[in-house]
Length: 232
Ligand code: SAM
Image 1 (spheres, protein in one colour):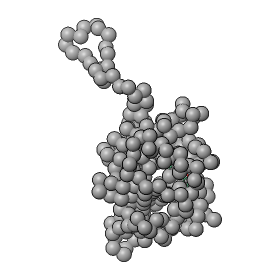
Image 2 (cartoon, helix red, strand yellow):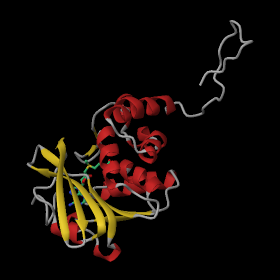
Image 3 (cartoon, helix red, strand yellow):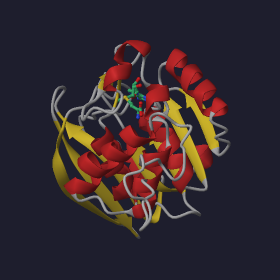
Image 4 (cartoon, helix red, strand yellow):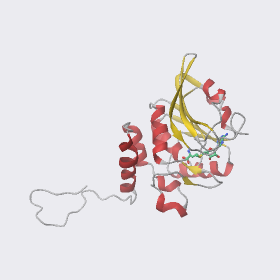
């Protein structure tokens, strides 16, 4: 923000409020040009995307691309999703402040942190122990305290914490895992990529009483969801 008034003349313009966060401008531009410009208007989602420090979840060698419009590699051959995909899937969940959300595929923990700002509680499952450990440590440094972590196969959900108002799967499944649908609240939604090993379609599943409605959203590409109700 630049301060200029009627008596400023040709003085050098200085920011009204100095920010101590050197990445804030890059994050705001990411939100404006990659997310809001593509139709995502949910203010709480945009605000979370603007505030969570994406750069902290990106490996050192990809720092220059931290806000690029693409997924990036993390450890163990996995990826941190494209910012638009994170925002889009989050918006589909229509999270309310009292909601409990289940995430399958913690990965770097970036999506988890976005969810943690919107929901009362987030439960997240990752099959690779080293990724879960790193994500857990990062969320602790960011003072995130409403997330429960689990290492294991998330395709079966986590019955002990069910039901969930929203479930997000951040890896590509061959079919919709039945246990996840069963663990939704009445009115709950599940968003996940479903399809082949290389390309999928993002699907929104809504549970209303015992009626299940499936809606195709758009094509996408995710790493494989590996497990009992996923890829073998
Ligand atoms: N949301 C993550 C982020 O913000 O960094 C990106 C997740 S990455 C695209 C997909 C993750 O799903 C990988 O970390 C992978 O190990 C994990 N995954 C694959 N199959 C899984 C399963 N059955 N249960 C839990 N996690 C699984």
